[in-house]
Amino acid sequence: MATLTIKPKLVVKALLKSLPPRAQEVIIKRYGLGKSPEKMTLEAIGKTYGITRERVRQIENYAIANIQKSKEYETQVSAFKELETMMNEMGSIIAEEDLLDSVSKDISTQNHVYFLLVLGRTFKWQKEDEHFKHRWHVDEATSKKVEEALKKLYKNLKDDDIIPESEMIDTFLNHIEGMNDQYRNNEILKRWLSISKKVGKNPLGEWGVSHSPNIKAKGMRDYAFLVIRKHGSPIHFREVAKQIEKLFNKKAHVATTHNELIKDPRFVLVGRGLYALSEWGYMSGVVKDVIKKILEKHGPLTKKEVIEKVLKERYVKENTILVNLQNPKYFKKDKEGRYSVVA
Image (cartoon, rainbow, N blue to C red; front, side, top):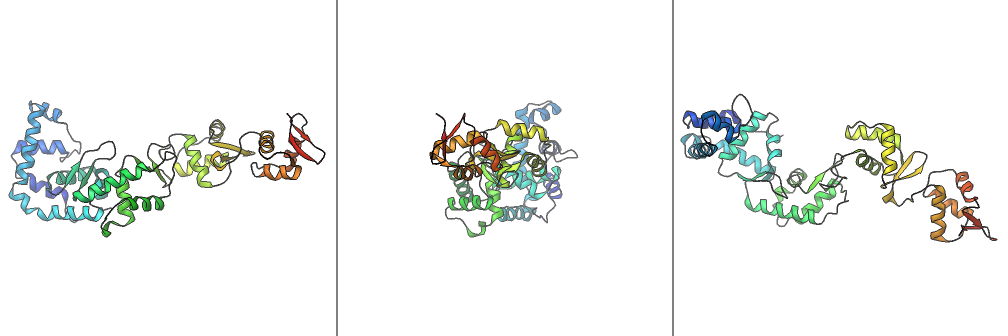
């Protein structure tokens, strides 16, 4: 949380004194500076006074210009300077939501700070677009460098990438050319990353492409994938359900979780209720299918060799493997004691 010594509401109140009554009322309604923090549209304000929305816009523009030329504005220079210093310390370019949230969680206070940003000559607002959120900056050069670096970062990401935060920060930093040393700290770099609409962070703190289910998890299957991946080894579906509730605060019924794991090719059943990720290289299918795939890949193998290879794919008892291997319908043994698939 950023700390301001100024009192935004008192500063705004002093600045509004330079305006005639109706202009004051329009600004208060437009920016949510009154008892209610709700901001009114140009159209709604126009209906209140029986004037067009365009006329309301003219009054708003007049009021802002008038305040900026007033004596009251000059008396509050230190307040604008403090806001500028704070923004420089936060990285110079900041997503609007992050900036306001860092000042206060109170909506009314945020509205007053926002109005000060609108008034301040050094604060530049940029509208959200395909790549970035609404944002403010106090340094054009830094703003451009950060935005270009974010575009390069996104361009080099694959849809299924899941990147640890420290690695993401290092990669991002490599894309920023000629960056001032004062900005080379993790908090600022994470703040810059949050400006992008194309990259994002999942609830486990891992980064990637924002539209990926690995980052923007939407259902039990996505949550299960992240849980198993975080666990790093096969895990029982009951534990998967528990971890979904613990890590994502989502209600996960055991039976529902199990059903979702069965349906999704990202998961492989490797033992009694134990699931792994198929990307880890585990073979799909029941034990019989695994034996068949192993023999087709490696050719005839001894009983010991088959057991060793199957146990790398499945958490089962050796006897289960032997029972399947000795089924003459699927497998045959040659004179050297090696097994192969029945043609």
